[in-house]
Image 1 (cartoon, helix red, strand yellow):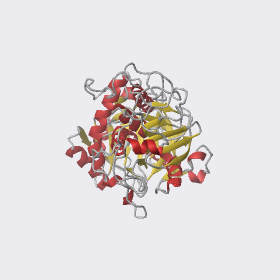
Image 2 (cartoon, rainbow, N blue to C red):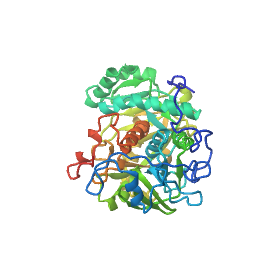
Image 3 (tube, rainbow, N blue to C red):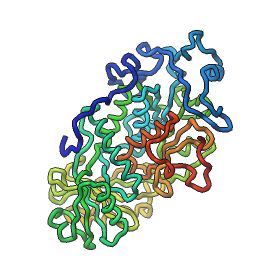
Length: 479
């Protein structure tokens, strides 16, 4: 693949589910909305019921539940063999018992389901819209991937994230990444710029520092209008977003996972077994993971929880090159991140639309996700004027008027750190939310952490910064 940093495919990338269960033995090309590897199908009728992770709350027993308790809850008895509870037959596709249900098939939910299925967990992934769609935060052709972070916890996670993207790429057999490098622009005296430089040095990421003068020689398409310096991270690049999302969902199905789109969740009943009602049926599982993006609070409200999330509509702008190819991948033009006030501005080399470069503001206007496509007043589009001004000053080879404007949703927390935690009352309900416009690159690690939380395991990273209780008005999660 062009500019790949990845090593050769690693061993041990397959699913842990034994051949003959689900689709692990032969793979699946079934489209979204079908029942690939769903328990109860002719290929996959089996007994499955294991003691789940410990659950403790005012409503759940503070120990692993037993099969007899669960069967009693379901109004039935365990078979005499003691092998557990039989899955629903093929004629009853909407009443199976799953290990985990994941609600929301964006990049975070898809990776969570992928990790669960690779661990041999019987998993259902639900999506309210037909797949693929452009209503949330995971669509589009490109996202920046980078090691450079000012926050140490994300910088540490990125090494793991690169490795997991590598694994998915090897499994998918298709390129998911293109190395372009990333140029971070900022004043030498800017504390945030200094943090970027220190992080790259501390983690020994190959990088190069440029003065305003040397920048012009190396990247003639960029004019440091205020004589900014630049630090160039060589290992950064572009993730092919649509392709990456599809690869995660395909990997999930290959491991026997069931993916259903066009099913909006209408009700969640917590308990030892969580019951999820959708527009298409009723499903039950020992645990639930909610990764619903801008719809998270809508699902959490009936469960007695509202998170401090702000949903924003982002204008994704593409700008025409005055001379075709000047800012293209073939000209080795990098991604960039400009440390500006009040919001950062970022750009990706022209590739997805020939002759158009993607330059966007890392902010947007408050919007209801159900009304994302409603035209906004001119006063609600300050970022467009900010971008026009930036392009005219810093990117002289672009026409300073957007040629194409698309939209995306951000779901931001007040501190722009993610929420990865259990529900305060129901420990078998796990929440992933508030990815604040920088979660796509970290989705493989986020999915792994949400998988570990749903299984009752110790997470791979310190989770304190991602806990719900960091917001003073909200209670701590159930343990």
